[in-house]
Amino acid sequence: MTIKQASSQMISKISALLETLGAHDELNATELSELLGEPRSSVYRMLRSLADIGWVDEGTAKGSWRLGLQLFRLSSGAVQRMDVRRIARPHMERLNKLTEQTVFLCIRHEWSAVCIERIEGLRVASLELQLGGSLPLQVGAAPQSLLAYADQDVLDGWQVLAEQAELTGYTQESPRTAAEVLPKLDEIRRVGYSLSDGDVTPGVGAIGAPLYDHSGEVRAALSVCGLRDFIFPSDSSVLRETLATARAISRSLGAPPALLGPEVQDS
Image (tube, rainbow, N blue to C red):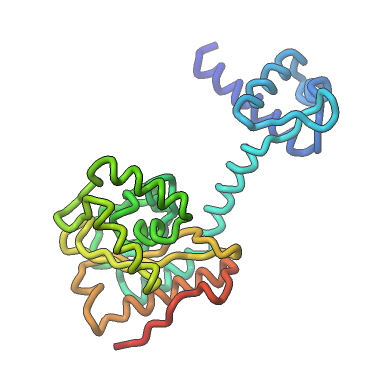
């Protein structure tokens, strides 16, 4: 048996063990051995290894095991990402048709904004942020919204890191220090949306807004991006439509009405 085959076989055994535990409240190694058709010693070794990474925990009865909290956290995060994508997608499609610009959905992962959905615009086919890609939190409309509305411990941690080294820059408009970024975050919180003007790609602008869930937490951020001449004119409806879409998505996520953001009227 090759190393690849052995690894695949072990993954299959672990998957079967977790599925079996998931179908029961608690099981001991002997019960798992019988259900899986595996030697008790092999099952126990798998349990100990999984316990080390928090995927299984000791149960209430002596010698019993159950699925671990870490596994629930991982699965919960995946479900939440799937939910926000599923809920946001039809709203994003409508926004894309109305504006003809590229529409992004991003979530925060540590100190980056990760694009989990993207609908291509008609006028700009190639932009820096691709599906599955990421940007640092201080540049771009969606990343800045995520940073502005992050918990205070996240903001404090970001500021400490930002003050230790120059920030990653993409253009001459990219902020290089925390001192440049912090006033922008205050302004985003004041008006309820973020603007990005050439700080990721020259000549490209974007409007971003936070998306709230039922708990009042910012789950993700929406942004619309394109050539700045189409994004920022005073008679442009892009800002109004972006904020209306952010409100609609937040409502679908169960956000409290007080957090749905400002109405923006046509100029």
